[in-house]
Length: 88
Image 1 (tube, one colour):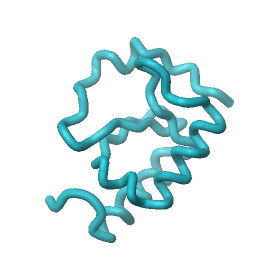
Image 2 (cartoon, one colour):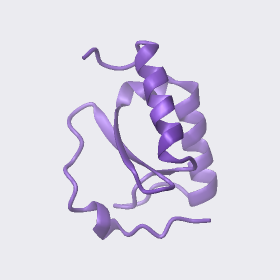
Image 3 (cartoon, rainbow, N blue to C red):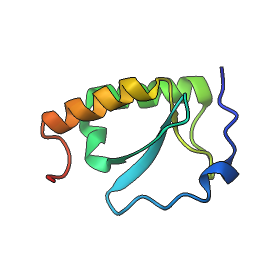
Image 4 (spheres, helix red, strand yellow):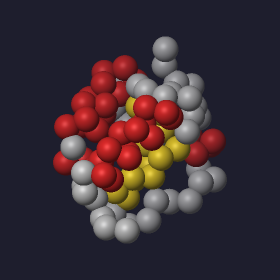
């Protein structure tokens, strides 16, 4: 099922800080993650799956991952625990 999220719903949100980018889960939750997470195979797999399911990001259309927020929270925690990304 393709997301019908409009760009107007995301245009009011702040731009991610330098070195970060925004992703959305299928249930609409926004995650702002470090660009360094692109080094991880799990995030790259999710991005490839997203492109297959929703098409490439175009214009203001957000990147929507084919997972829910609970799964993405697990991915982010695992990447943080593995030391990927900026140090807090």
